[in-house]
Image (cartoon, rainbow, N blue to C red):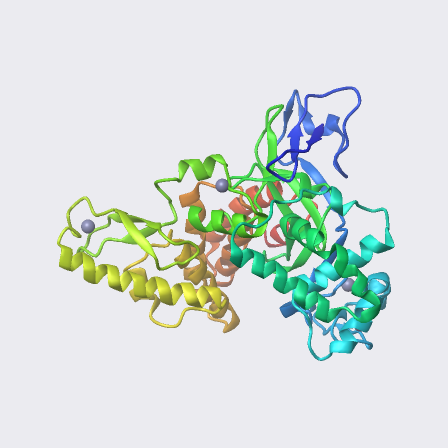
Length: 464
Ligand SMILES: [Zn+2]
Ligand SMILES: [Zn+2]
Ligand SMILES: [Zn+2]
Ligand SMILES: [Zn+2]
């Protein structure tokens, strides 16, 4: 059903192959018979299912609340996790999970104890785990066979990689210093091939390196979804796909504008994206939108980022057609205000905290399709839910979704999660009609992106 092909530019490729008598197995996928309708790959087919990572670690900031082995969160368990008595850093949900991790954790535990109470950055722990596992030669995966990206051309990227190596040198005890010898190529391979592992709510919990999944190339408008059940990765087709179609997933947040996506892909995965969406959005990015300041005017002003990833360096590319920004003085004062607000929201988003200030005043300058507002709404939404203000939360949740309409990406797994959240809030607000409409939409998306046997889909059914 699926073919794997190494490519020069990408990490390798996955293709829908024409049916043959002997199916190529690319992973733990279903058999070709089930998946292929004629010669198409039907949407909602598991391309890869239940793929265990070769190595994984919990995000440093989540160590107290996420089980290192199975990634269950303590809020799901409704009880705290057990701490490793040795290093007092890692946590587990059960003795079984601790035992299962011990082979990987034993040398790590000693290393952590040595530098306690300091805990190294997530990626340093991750790299050390991979190097140790490669040395143990577990035969699960040949990491060096994965795509090796080119040398980073940007000196800042290079410095970033060297900083990780420096921290690794500090982290490893003398008995393990020999691992540093092969660390640089493995670091480059790892940073270009690993995936952020997200939880049920779509939040990032950690990082993993997977065989097979790593062969699937990126697109900013992917034809497959990648989701996680604990640490297990799952890839599903979200469109009907013809033979010889390359399968793609998104490595980065598709709700970022083109310039930011490309800057991220270049710095972490070291390639220039050549996807159809990047081509289409070259001169007109649906996420770079501003409101016309003209009284009662509903025109959307378009702009471009001139120094990505800087959120505040911008150039207006399409002014109001009714001439509301033609006067240079009006334009200047409006531009300054916009720059200031982009800065405030951009900083708050970067710090992962809700924006401080009057959302209504920001909304007069930026429409909900602006990528910064999209993230800002998520922040105030979480805050409103946290403080039990469900009516207000519902108002923000409805706005979070609008960006997916602007992108025309109805089958984004995160859209499914957001729809589910709106439905839950509508149920709390006793909006019966709204609820039925939203939950049906959530069913349609999640059935496809996560699969009917997923935890998320079970949550949808429980509400339905
Ligand atoms: Zn566990
Ligand atoms: Zn320990
Ligand atoms: Zn792209
Ligand atoms: Zn106008």
